[in-house]
Image (cartoon, rainbow over all chains, first blue to last red; front, side):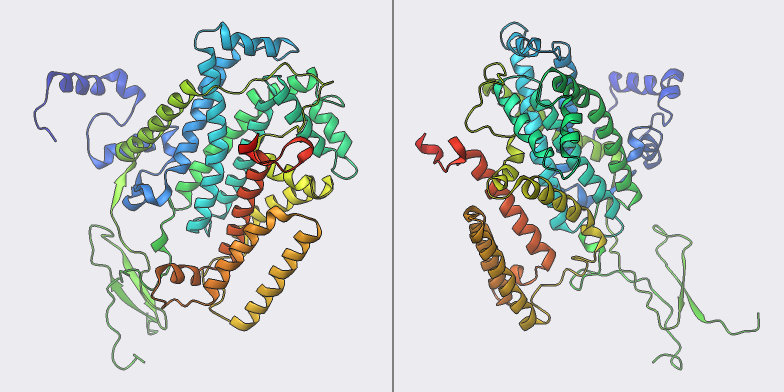
Length: 269
Length: 234
């Protein structure tokens, strides 16, 4: 730590102490524990997290940062997805022409699509990896059961997001992958063909299906995902922070006992 | 208050942690605190900084990958021209592989539904709570059940010609057998590890192995008409 305060530091302090800054970030300047706790507690997004984390949980081996990285892919997907929406029309055959435009006409269009595609694949992989890591650590146990269930919901949302996005390029790969996948829904007993029709807006993959998948992919599913991600994070705090293995009774772990007044000899057994 | 108290008062003397905590201990209960005290770290800025760093490294990796590898794009969708084989996205290829052996209502509806339901209920059954090794208690009976279940599973897989699912089952079964024949006092760290693993661990590990193998087979080893192909021969 440097004790020398530079002009820049002073300027930053001045800005942080200014009336306008304080009206936005109420915790104000200062490096005390209280200020740092307030920085979390008084921010609408950050207050989802607890103000303190056990040091051991921040180490790489505890979580492999899989949840954080999943959030990272999600953020990249939101940003690249919004940019891709600027160049995309969910109609036949314009959708495919837009792909070609992205490839050959739009500046960095190909890069944008690559980034979206690979992030999406990685997100599916990371969600699975996160699930298995949580299971093998036993981190789903009481009181974290419900957060595990929310995690399963998020797994399904991720798969649906990826699946609906798969159709949007409107190439052979997209068309037949969705045909194969959606045919499975016809196998549901009794209501199978109804579900199939509802999903595609027709009896086979066509322009209606493209529009439906577009709406699901760009509006319905991302909003649902954001809500569940928020609950998922908030529940970590409410369920007592990230799971620590040694907080469970374990014979080998060092146990700290509260000092207790010794029992009178008469009553001790 | 004339009645004698049913408890003895003790005081936690660590003021830093609990300046005013008074512990009341009734008879026949232990006052042992089973939570190890440990160092904590402020979320702002330490943890947030690390999270941001992790996400930025990820972003750099993805940007590099995206610069060198292009996302696939085939010809425009043509409903009259079916590619052979028509494949689902890679994360569904495990299920598509199962569709090859079982009717759609089983592989496409029953199996996924059962998977999701069993994943959801995991924490609500007392699975893995004690995390005790599967064969440490009631060994003979559990071994008998294990032998019959494994034999039944493999016969089932052979009957439906699901040969690709047999290898992972056998690998997990062998690991379980090594675990069953090891103790927690074993000199080998690997055997101590296997011996300590509970039932839920084995089920999940079997599921993980099957998931990987079925997805890999569906992705790389299936060609026209869902026939077996070797990826390096094409």
